[in-house]
View 1 (cartoon, rainbow, N blue to C red):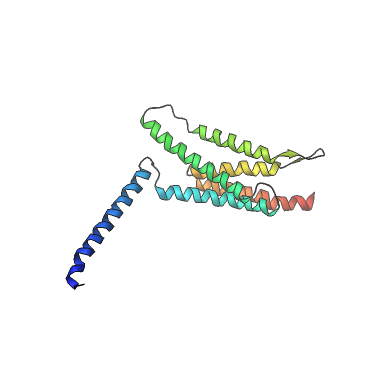
View 2: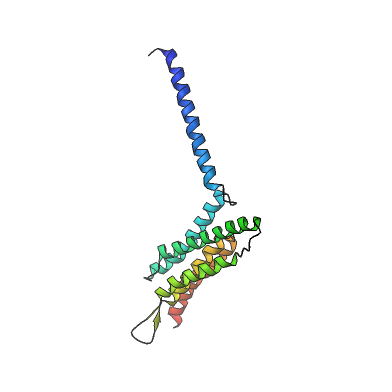
Length: 178
């Protein structure tokens, strides 16, 4: 090919590249048009909720409990998503003078986690009950995820530290003393 013919092809390629970038940009904007939270904030909250719930679950899994790493991660992440959706819906409803009540998300998360946690609790063949700590850990993971989703990351991290100390350190003290 002669050297002079490559310029129109390069121009067409640049035009297609611009069109593709415009399509991507428009699509990205459409995905976020209803959200008041920036995408980075949403990603951070979901990630933090998954990590904190996961660490609690990892400790439970390491000692052979039925609800472990993935269960705690999923519950904490789901709670964060529910909290963020509630905040988004509340923002949208306030603009329309609707009767909005963001506390309902906490009720919904608590009910859902309680259902899952109840499945982890059972009576053994004797007089004992097993799985109470696992159920309580799932409930705590749901609360931590809700706090992260609502944007209270510092509160979630503090709660995580306390839950982790209860599950890991207090368990060791219990074994030595009881």
